Amino acid sequence: MALAEDLAANEKAVHKTFADLVSPDEVIGVEQFFKVYHEVMDGKRKAYLIDVRTRPEFCAFHMEGTDHNVHCFKDGVMGWAVAGHLLVNQFTGSFKIFE
Image (cartoon, rainbow, N blue to C red):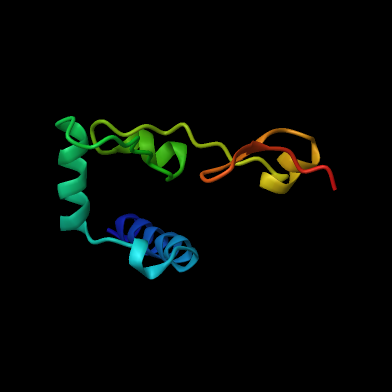
């Protein structure tokens, strides 16, 4: 039972860390997500559902239809920009940062 309690505590801590980084109006509850999930699975809404837990957690169990294709690269989006790769803005389209 201790392992399950440790996993639950760790999941809550990680969830709080991510939730604190997201605008409160973008954090939804289980029932609201359940509705969105079924809209996606039924083809009524376009979305790509990504499970961002660790690989072992994903392999142990995950929601049907979700993927685990998230990679974290150490230089982040600023490293991407400094390397001269394209970025995109929903209003202006593609661009590069030169300075």
